Image 1 (spheres, rainbow, N blue to C red):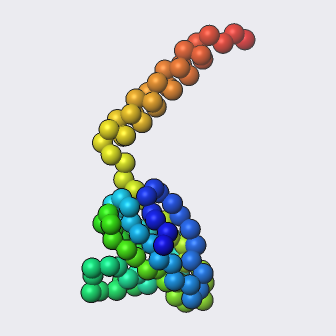
Image 2 (tube, rainbow, N blue to C red):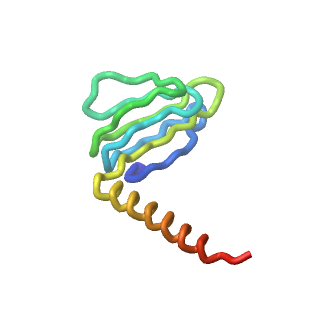
Length: 108
């Protein structure tokens, strides 16, 4: 069973069933083709079309199936933690400052 612990995208072939385990809370986004989703601890199945999303809980298991004549494309998006967002913000500011300093030292 494949484990989803980071943001990833992949295709599911027509008629294929992909078993997954969600390691971190994440969001499933259907990018192309319809999929059928079965979740552990849920009595409902989900029929998702392109553009639909589904929030997933850490520890749950999924079974995804592509339906129809085309392959389905799905993407899993793991939200970043607050401290990771802050570090990314500081890194971007640092990169901009370095670019400005280097840009000021150029000679023509």
